[in-house]
Length: 174
Image (cartoon, rainbow, N blue to C red):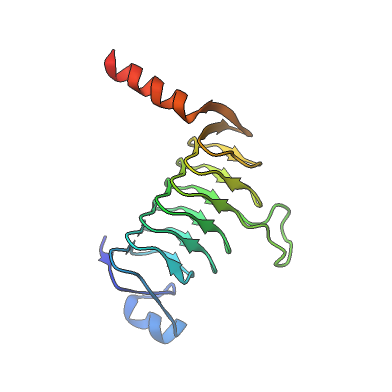
């Protein structure tokens, strides 16, 4: 795979023909990287953000600085993502709780320093709090408060973030 820096052309054709086909380009800020191929329709991507191959970033998505969006992640239109957010491979962020809603979407807000695990699904209209962790494979249907760990299907509270730090410290010392 190759790495594209600078201008990211948006379409599904080859890099050379995309400008002719789509007629528009997305400017990536300094230090931002989008691995080819990926679909990026947004206009706001923060400095130092990395977007993995085969990721889909919808229209009017706002992505903060220093985020990591892994390959095959799907981020629906109008999602807002804070800074230093990690979104694992195959994660899905939806904006339509009862499709088709004909553009009456309920976007999701992911606050700074949140972690969304691989293959997690965030259902439309929720907020993921600052510093929260959503476990791999979780299906989140309601707001996750700041600094909490949630997992399962449907996702539920597992522990506070301070308990997570204590348990990982315990395992390192054994």
